[in-house]
Length: 133
Image 1 (cartoon, rainbow, N blue to C red):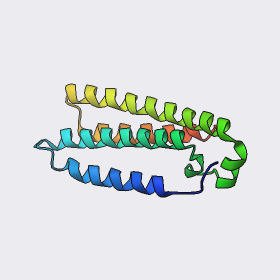
Image 2 (cartoon, helix red, strand yellow):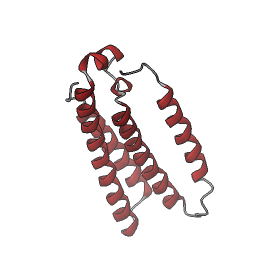
Image 3 (cartoon, rainbow, N blue to C red):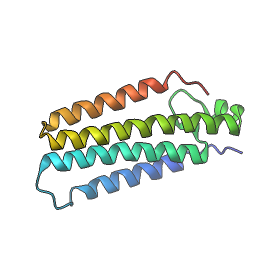
Image 4 (cartoon, rainbow, N blue to C red):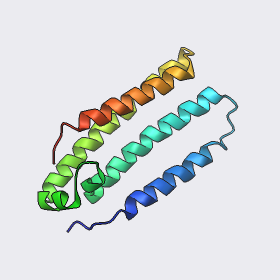
């Protein structure tokens, strides 16, 4: 039975913020490298959240799905939907990881990383709207 709880997303949020703060203590003196590390950390954290949602079937954490809809859908449909979201965000994180490595190798401005990260995450989120529970 699906429980109506948001404790997991709160824990994820606290861990995300805590580890994110910890990133500033990495002994890297290059702001571009540190920014790339943080952006990749963020994309991996989003993938981790989608995996947590998949494991716990908490699809009602996604915008547009109520707890009642998630409960009515049943376990199999919740798992299938959550796994689709996980795969989509994992692919986006992988694309950004490759791009950030290429941008670093070719010494692109960190602004390019920030723009591509934002575009990739936004487009990925928009692509998920076509899937229904």
